View (cartoon, one colour):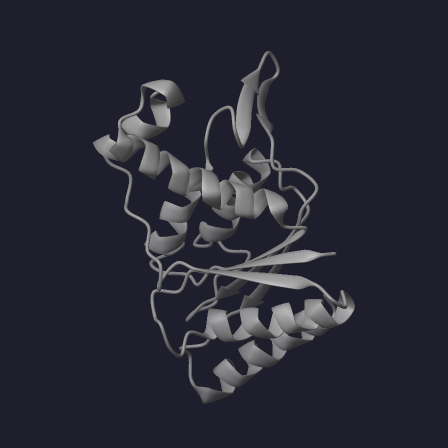
Length: 198
């Protein structure tokens, strides 16, 4: 059975265009994969703590030497990694905030990027260990940035996902959402065309 992991990373709990489109994409993928199980990871409703001394200490302390507090932090990371590894399809909502991803999504990435677990270094460089996934990224943007130097979000996401081994990625954009009603409607229509083709 196909498992779809949907990662909502908008800072807003209601009305986020990335979440709206992500829900539509997941519904489309369910139609294409009858019986698929959907797991939703809502990073706004279930926030993760930002990296600090305690978290880094937990990650880099051998399991048998961790304190109970460190064990709990490491267990949270490992549960998120297990959830990711169990998915066949990963759909990520990635609204653009100040030219990047939300702090919620960046923190999630920090929790799943674990040396020796989701990537490792070899004589030939880094090797991603999260393989065999199809990834869709839905990016909602107030302006139009695709193909310009101001789109630092797309290269970052491609680099990070590829670093973990997720190289089969499709990006769906809704751009110009804050540029007036006509531009917003056109942005949503364009994104929905891409979703229909997914």
